Length: 151
Length: 117
Image (cartoon, rainbow over all chains, first blue to last red; front, side, top):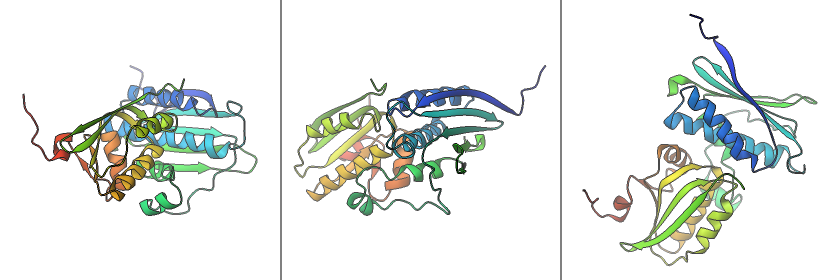
């Protein structure tokens, strides 16, 4: 019996910076994560982190670009026993946090940022590994890993 | 078409407003949530958000809940989230655990015993 490779690409797809593409991205990752055996709370963590990350690409990295004019590439790897999602874009590079992302202050959110401001906190705290690969002139890559041990 | 859906229903019960939400609350359904909120007028009564029908809430959704809680509390009421599924309950606890209380059922939020069959 052939053994399953330790690291396998289980899905790859190109989406665009159209906000409505978030639904297709969400369903794409959700389907693959379920297929890979990630369920319940852990599945919810993966879904929220990916949707937040891609919403940030659409709203911030691609700010000023016409809708549906720029690519968002997703790769989903089963890196046994973990699930790894790589999100690639060609937008404005994001300045990654240099330390722990502080818990959002509700009073500050209400005063200064009535909407949003929580996405990065969710991404960093819901996933087990979060790495940004940002090089001038090269695509931005965000790598998100969820460990099966957290299932 | 966004592919996402969000429905909401207000019901006055046990001296409180119950807002039952179903579907997904995120950037794409935010306008629908605003429409649902437009049907509500702050009157000092407690508001219980019945989250049992929600499948997914993104950061913008939690921010909107924080704003709603602030409005309700400013008028002397209390805002509680009830029956949230784990994928909603956990992120909400992570960010607003100290500010938005959660209970397991709407009945618990209303302080009434749960009916059994």
